[in-house]
Image (cartoon, rainbow, N blue to C red; front, side, top):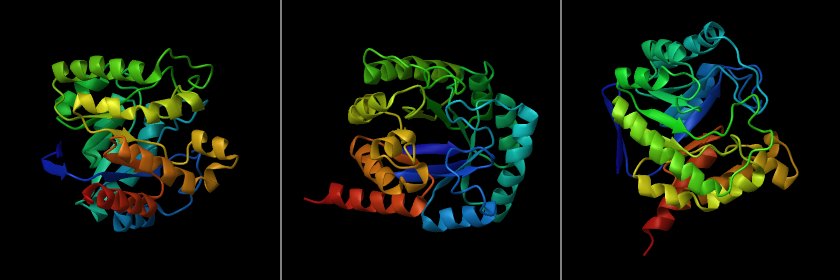
Length: 274
């Protein structure tokens, strides 16, 4: 069983849990959640089984452009404040690689920091999270969002991701971060082949004894392989989420909570079967 101390609220989970994605961005690669009222979306995700809601104001899709931190804060703070006020028992994570945004979001009600750069895009991030005494989602990414899709290369993607986390976990621990969640970074500086290879070998990350987050939801590895679009990639997402669960994922980061909850329920029943 893994436990996370979320600003004094203990989150313990012996079965996988769901992180629902709420994008406060105008240029998300998946438009499905953009036009819904954020509070209505939050309620639906909570009702469908989300334990954590992940709020992001900076698009990190391949080729995305950075916005300044003030604009990012203006996007995410009203959403975080409203969700925290209306659903105070729900755990909120802030999806950002900026320590300034993380600080503002935590003051508004967030209690997990989800950083795609693992501290590599803001030198103050790891120290800031340690000071805040919050769980930290530490993700692997080759390159940066603006250019990560341009010719990524690995000799052995699973080994290189494992080595990255061995080093990064030590860095986080030495800074004072207690609760570290690792995210292999599907789609971040990886080709479709890299993503499938990493998923196939993901169980090697279990040796790190940290919660593993899988963020596969509606990504291009799914819809390009199927010859469809992000809007039509729900079934493919469920298929890969199930494989991720079988290979050690204990947090699914998804746009579609109900379907992920069903996958977890079936996986749990499968695991319990004699």
